[in-house]
Structures are given as C-alpha cells and as structure tokens.
Amino acid sequence: MSTFKELLQASFKSNDTEEWLDVHFTRPIGLVFALFWNKLGVHPNAITILSIFLGAAAGCMFYYTDLPHNILGVALLMLANFCDSTDGQMARLTGKKTLVGRVLDGASGDVWFVFIYFALAFRMMGQYIPGTHLHWGIWIWAMAIIAGFMSHSPQSSLADYYRQIHLFFLKGKDGSELDNYAQQRAVYESTPKNKLFARMFYRTYANYCKSQEQRTPKFQQFFKKWKETMPTLDPQKRDALKTEFLNGSRPLMPMTNALTFNVRAITLYICCLINMPWIYLLVEIIPLNMLYIHMHKRHETLCGRLTEKL
Image 1 (cartoon, rainbow, N blue to C red):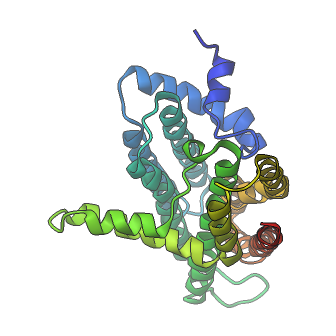
Image 2 (cartoon, rainbow, N blue to C red):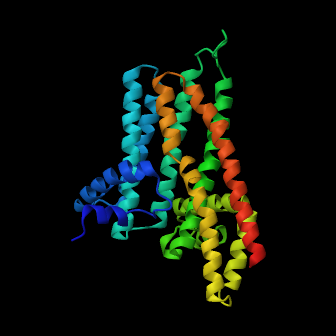
Image 3 (cartoon, rainbow, N blue to C red):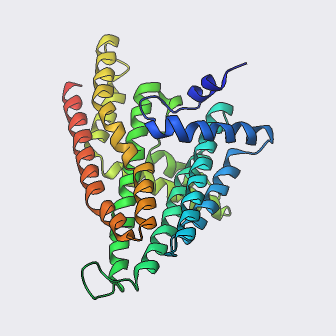
C-alpha cells in the first residue's frame, strides 16, 4: 500500500510545475479531501461543481466592507481552491480524467473571479477615490473590466497553456492536457446538432484553444516543425533539443504559477481585509501584466531559437 507521501507525489502534475505553497499546503489538504471523496464514490467533476458554488459564494462575501463577511469570503475561496485541487488530484490518482473535467476545472476559477470582480465593483462604487472627495462611481467598472477581462483572463489562459506545453515535453502526450483548436473544432462539428449543450461546450473550448494559439505564433511554428522532423531526427539530437526546450521553459513555470491563483488570491485577501480592494485591481493591471508580457516574450524567443535549430 502506498504511503501518504507517495500518493501526494503521484498526485502532482510534475515537480517543475507545482508551486511551493501548493506542495506544502494546498496539495496535502487536497489529497485528504480526494481520499475521502473517493471512498464515498464521488466523481471528480462533482467536486469541481461544488468548488464553483463555493467560489461564487466567496465572491458575494467580498461585496461587504465589514471584517466578518470578508473573513468568510477568504475561508470560502480557500475551501473552493482546496476542492479545485482535490478534483485534479483525484483524477490523476484514479485515472478519471475527462475533457469535460479539464474544461470544468478551468472554468471554475473563471466563475469565481467573475463574481469577485462584480462584487468589488459594486462594493467600491460608493467609496471615495483615495486622496479625493470623488466617488469611484461607474469608473470602477472600467477598472474592473480592464483588470478582469483584459488582464486576468489572458494571463491565466496563457499561463495554463505554457504549463501544458512544458508537461508535454516533460512527460509526453499522456502526461499533458495540451489540446489544439483543429482537434477540438472537429469534435464540435462531429457532435450531433440536437445535443445543443455539448456543442456549445466543445465550441467554447475550441475557441479557448484558438485564442491560446493565436497569441503564440513562434511556438506554433516550432511545434509544427517538431512534429514534422521527429520521425527522421537523430535520437541524440532530438533529446538534446527536448532538454534545451525544458531548460528554457522551466524558469518560466514560477511565472505561470504567479499568474494563476495563489498570488492574486493572497493579494485579494489582504486588500479586502484592509478595505482597499482597488489595490488588487491595480496589481492585476500593472505588475501582473508586466510579468505576463515578460513571460510571453521569453517563451516566444525560446521557440524561435529552437525552430532555427530544427
């Protein structure tokens, strides 16, 4: 029988892509949840759906300015994140991995933060802009849209894409969830027209993949060339190129982690507890966007250099 430590290691995506806080805090708690839910025969997708409701409830709590509601919001969002970790760990340990589960897992965080951004905007409309006698009013909605839909969304989607790319080169196709637009579009078109929900689901996911591909032209060139030359490439050269790619991609993994959950969640907690949520929106718009641009540039430069070698 495997020990808890062995099960924990097996539940990781990879050591390269796991964040320190997740390794030492979120994943161990998630594994306890996973073992408990698995004994009850609960499917990982059901836990993902539970996390969506918990995260949405957390967002509603951040509308209020008093400390009890905000502490409850922090607790609910942490619990939602534990459930989000649990479903992935359970899926990896039990083999219950599905495309629906992957999409639900990605969408859950989006739902949480949609509620959070709406709650913060409503919360701040009547508050004063720091250093002035003016209320934020409708301007806070513009700030929330820039922070949420124009910053947070592309940051997290590209961060997820880069991690899946890294996992593909590290562990192969079976160890990654790297999908592409053409493949998912074909799934959508082959789905019977009377299955409206399934078609909407696959079309949305196909467009999500397309948005990732459109922002990574040099990686697309490199990956296409890689797949074309692999059958004829000398094994020693192939391994050397693979190692070079991983060595270039590995330093970007902490950046992908910073652009997903923990950094923004901790920032959100602090800003709401001190009743200055506008600081959280500024963090999304300025430093996290700067990190996003830097990460994107380094990855594209790496892919361009390796394409030339191929």
